[in-house]
Image (cartoon, rainbow, N blue to C red):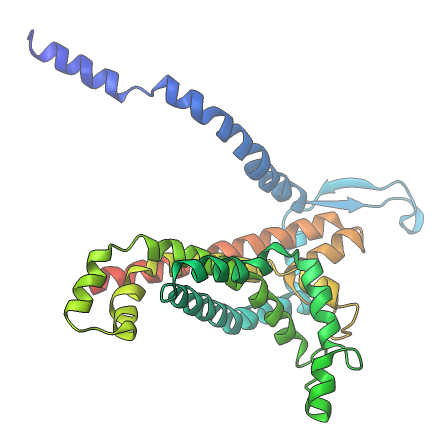
Length: 307
């Protein structure tokens, strides 16, 4: 009995939460709740409301009432809003693989150059990420407009219609790739730096060249970084907003419902329907979560079956 008592007391003490740990976590949890949990909860709350107008011909004082799921039904009945999801999904299917291929190629290339040139090239590749999306779109917009762009001057009649109905989506994709390829490259470079040098030395002893080393050592070991950048890119694709908002001043093909974010923005600030915009935002968040977790579950299932 005397020997069991201290063990039981030690177990009870270890099962209690450490007050010092909670004291350190407290500020972070408070900020996290304020900037993340509370806005999501408030958006959910607003999506369940509607404006009721009274009096003859609805000219009376408006009141806010409970709408239930009416805003969600209305959003899902809008063909333009549903088409915007198909548009960004097509955008992501093409743009995300191209951007990750470019980022991975740049990261692997940096591993083959000297340390001096590696730092210079790394900073150069990352520099476009420091340019705000609005400024980047304005800069590229001048390169798309016929009569101003040197690209269209050089190509002449063979120049594609960068801002036309069939070309503007891929013009936006080009801007996004230019902006974020360097950012994703840095994530992949950080993963490459964590690979033990002994593996490279063993590969050299076995007679493996740079291409074989990249295919059989580097790429398999940077898979976590590739998965992370892919998830971030999928979420960013669904949140596409700044680039189409700016370029629509030059491209009539970009409508107010061109992307889900633009559709919610237009409802909130052009149509003054905050509650419908909140419902569309919630739908967008749900789609982003479903796609992200589906992709992660497929990756994890493939890794589990490959073991």
